Length: 266
Image 1 (cartoon, rainbow, N blue to C red):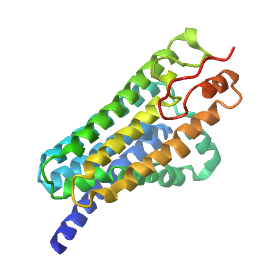
Image 2 (cartoon, rainbow, N blue to C red):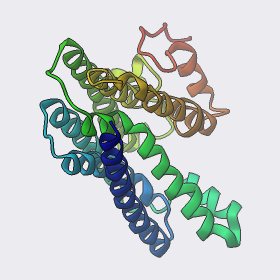
Image 3 (cartoon, rainbow, N blue to C red):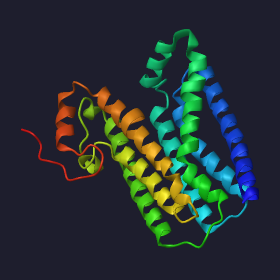
Image 4 (cartoon, helix red, strand yellow):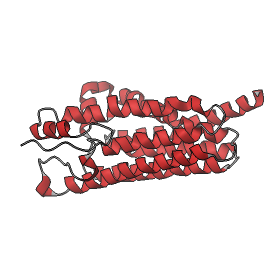
């Protein structure tokens, strides 16, 4: 038992150093470009780095470990690619511009601590179910693994389809000033956020298959809280305050969980 704890701490230590180095590179890019929204592109890669680090350092290469590492890699590459395409040539995101203005002369240190390192901490905590699977002894696959993969696929489809549909809508000049309420956006105001949260709950279900894996529930809880109350739903709703059409959309559409929409107001 003592040997296992020491090995786990060693894996955590190396993985933490890899992640810190990765975040420092993102920080340098952001400082040079004067654009802290580059962290949104680096964000998905941080999860991939942690997943593969723990997978390789432990060296068991069990089937469950292969599954979750690949799932995180698919999720991270898709997210980073989408954010890069969406933000290309648009400069710093307004959220980060506001922070830059608020921090004034202290923008460098605040950026490092409150953007890059803070998001690094979130990455480390959210991906912990995967980390735990990758350094634990893995038993044979059982029914919860397949349920977890199925839940993950549902989340991935919601996030991917939602992002594609919204991207096409926003890039059509004819839709300027309109509210998108077609496709999966008819059933939830935030299909992309719902999809992201669902994927991490799917991975948690898989983590239950290893001894004490149920204890990693704080991972999906943190990402759910962050998406709904901090960085996702709350910020977007605030951005559309005072928009009468969006207010109507909110009244007829489920805020988070997909549900049939109500009839449009006349």
